[in-house]
Length: 103
Image 1 (tube, helix red, strand yellow):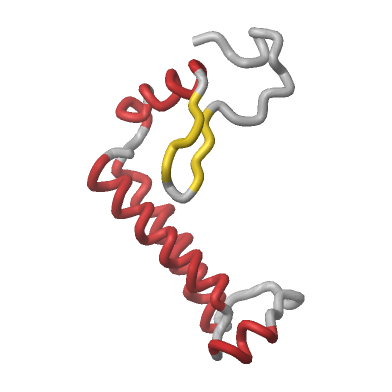
Image 2 (spheres, one colour; image 1 turned 90 degrees about the horizontal axis):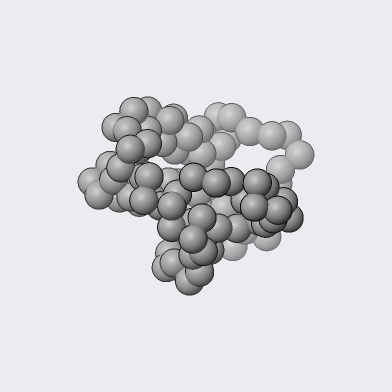
């Protein structure tokens, strides 16, 4: 597989673009990368996904966190920081999908 830089396209930023979970653009290089998915995805991703999800939960509950992160408007409206909750949902859904479909 020839790299984007070797093709003289060193300013390339995306080989595949997703919007709303749907693939909206994929060039030839992106198609090659997507075709490699079965060869590079392993069940070992479960640990890192779970670890990242647990870290987001700890941030949500205040057990872990960055001292300068504070979103009072979200906390006032919902009584918790919805950003961490959305990260948890995204990670959970992505992890389940990756482990069940390989993609």
